[in-house]
Image (cartoon, rainbow, N blue to C red):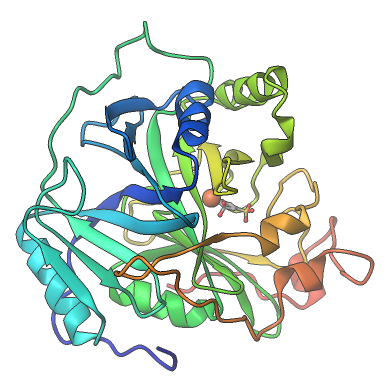
Amino acid sequence: MSGPIATPHVPPPDIVRCAYMELVVTDLAASRAFYVDVLGLHVTFEDADTIYLRTLEEFIHHNLVLRKGPVAAAAVAAFRVRTPADVDAAESYYRELGCRTERRKEGFVKGIGDAVRVEDPLGFPYEFFFESTHVERLTQRYDLYTAGELVRLDHFNQVTPDVPRGQKYLEDLGFRVSEDIRDAAGTTYAVWMHRKQTVHDTALTGGDGPRMHHMAFATHEKHNIIAICDKMGALRISDRIERGPGRHGVSNAFYLYILDPDGHRVEIYTQDYYTGDPDNPVISWDVHDNQRRDWWGNPVVPSWYTEASLVLDLDGNPQPVIPRTQSSEMAVTVGADGFSYTRGDPEAHGFKLGGQL
Ligand code: XXG
Ligand code: FE2
């Protein structure tokens, strides 16, 4: 599907938060070693083909499903909705958009009940559910708390060729913009959008897509992220550290990006800010401001712009990847011909600061 995305006449589902991702992995034992032994995610359930994992403070069944399969990909990005009726609302909404939908009252995966999966207008597999088995929230299991403990799922990040087109669709769906990256000529390179009261539940990154850029887990403190770096060094897997640690410009969060055995990117993220007021100011960054993606001015590695996970359609086949036609952020900011700046006033560089309320 391409071209403008219509606004449905029926109301969107009331989305509470990003809830879990299902990843297809090619070597389940290697993935278990990464997510359980290195990152310390907690196993809710596992069998020969699947592992269900959750963060320390989670009380729904899982935040990550690892499923063994032939081609590494993101099978679904799932959102929790406020009521059971919101699953009906999601189904009607996407049907009106003309999207393929599949409803399963018994759920698609263990621990989740009535749910609808859709191939959304951008080509991403989204799921909406309310019902979930409650499991023990491990918040005060300090006996289990590790130095790099992952405490919550924070967000998804999706790569799509036309960011404004995707932004309009997600705004119709009820997401609000917190920050974006643009240039003076009007190109939007990335946008961060939220339902819960943080900087984002998902972000759109301009690039060849649909592809999944990463999922992000939160830690309590910055030192938990440093501990993950130290552990990866000690285990001699520092080659899986792709970018960071550092401080983001966008979101102000402290961050680290690491790669799982299939190359799925995981961000570790902490200490962004509250966005819950209706008039929360939108922050727009100039694409030429070299503190936008790293507040300390460290360059972004090229792989971070170019690599991402395939996503699956509802039959389990990889979605074709459509190239971005507008200028790429990497091309305008990385290398000798990039004209980024550190000091000074963005408006002096022709960039109009300000929001989009
Ligand atoms: O979560 C994020 C990110 O989308 O992963 C990237 C917050 C900020 C950034 S950025 O690299 O733009 O600072
Ligand atoms: Fe992120």
